[in-house]
Length: 299
Image (cartoon, rainbow, N blue to C red; front, side, top):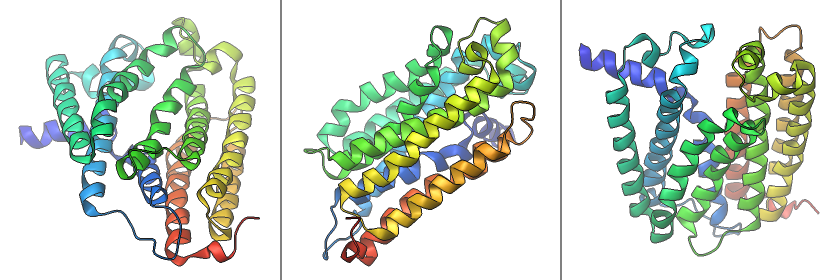
């Protein structure tokens, strides 16, 4: 029973269900790297399986490192005092061993993909750890987090095409980075007063909640423009464009749910709606590639 209990505690620590944010974008990058055309086919399972393992491992590494780096803060914040490291369900020593295991699994999965992914794996691990420290010295911390998830489509692309990084992958990197930064700003609004009292540099603490909500809206508006631009660069058609409009609508709805004086629906906006966006981007790209809607190009 202790193994089951520890496993559940680890899943809570790394929020395993939030893998839905990164995996669809990694798949989108991998599928787009194959290039549109009448002979398009999905990447081989020999690519997709290690890609999934790598993405889950690096995301687990990033989350566990974040919990370890923020342990002193989480002990003081009423919202985070139920986290497994704070309650003692998981020890610091165990978490360090878990980090080492995730790093080894991630590096091994990258090696199974190709040499480029293997050589870049230390950079990915270092950057996914570094973002946890940024809120201690810059209000741009949300954008640092965004770039960590923004690497997902780049990773997917390089898993399939290690010798060439296309414009579509770069635009998806920017779109995902801004999308994540926007919803992280929304999520941080819950802790604005606490962060300010601890001298932390989240945007809500630095700017105040109303201005932070405006910044998040502007950030999401930029992301909503970049998603269709990525489709255009990838040679996708009107099917993906239609999905892009739906994504823009979801983002608008997300911001209508949250007000400066009412943050009660942040969890709905954070998990449910953003999970929908991640899946929609992948399904839109996949459907466009598979059904060949390039007979209806953007322009």
